[in-house]
Length: 84
Image (cartoon, rainbow, N blue to C red):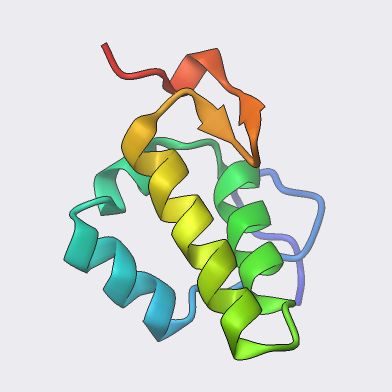
């Protein structure tokens, strides 16, 4: 993979269908797209690198919960994404 026009220096991970479906089902695609490119990419890479399916699902749920709550990124405070 090569860097794309988003300015990321790391490879851009393609979004797996199960992640896209989960974002659509929970109505969180907009919240996902509003996050910086590096966060979108980190979430996808982190989820997809899990070896076990149950770990992928656990990570996916964490991402969805963080997007829904706002103000959190990878269990860290992220004031820029807080919901008002």
